[in-house]
Image (spheres, rainbow, N blue to C red):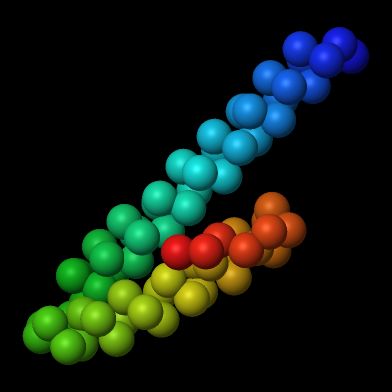
Length: 67
């Protein structure tokens, strides 16, 4: 494997991790929006979902999501 291939693979993985980090926030807010009637309920649901999705991210990638 050449340096260029190694670099391209690393960049692809980095892009995928970045996209998944963004998806955590979007997904958590959508779940909260669908389940929560009030803003306070939505924020509570959002925080729980961010924690859950961040944990899944960390298990998959081995690095914190930092959302």
